[in-house]
Length: 310
Image (tube, rainbow, N blue to C red; front, side, top):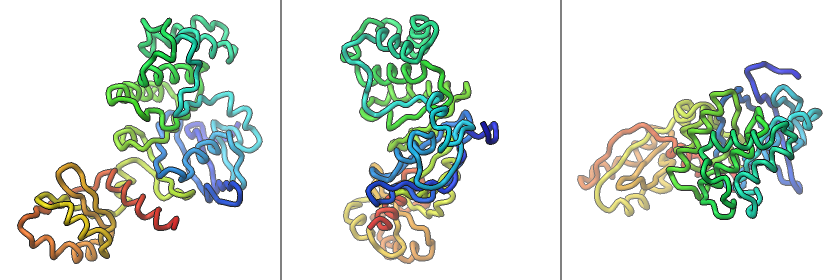
């Protein structure tokens, strides 16, 4: 094993193509041990491919690096032994109970005391009282807990979560993330892909990937600062008409409704001010300078990456 002890993943220049189409291009990044690292980006942007290359589940066409100290090219089998993978789709046995599923997974991994290990996971994740309930009868939130329990049974060093809370209610999502933070606090490194802004904000660091290219990464605060977005919040009547008038104007890089207001943003302050000047004189609108939100940055990056792709 090689690599810095505090770095879980360290890769440089990863590139991957399928059928002649580049899915990930020249990607380099580091992930700290015990951190929660979030991947954001449009569908088809290469997030899943990136995650699989980072942890040795997929061999890159070019590039190099380590995961958990192992070489992602030559020591992939060693990496896989230390990885837990939770897919978006529930993949355990629907006709087995919660207890039976967990005991089965424990035996598959060759754990010495499968019954005891399953019981400990049931207690930790609050599944007590549902041990004999069939997986098929569980709600989305309870299935999510069961899947997380199965992934963490063998005590992996790295956990991969592919949009794990899609279709789950807000309370269940919050409880799920509380458990993820507890696991990270115990030293587990977590890679998670998500489209939810509140979940991205719960990550220690995030990366935005669009059509195979890493556009930005860092803490949420760093990503917002790097965007260089100047943002105005606009309230008033007939905002939909204002949206259509501003959309596409030179200097306006992003305009989107947020509740009862509009967020109008641009990276070039002079051009943005020139574009909105005629509308600021209209007294039916109230313009307030504000800090860009992560969602502002996300939408602006989506707009920009879409243009790049085309």
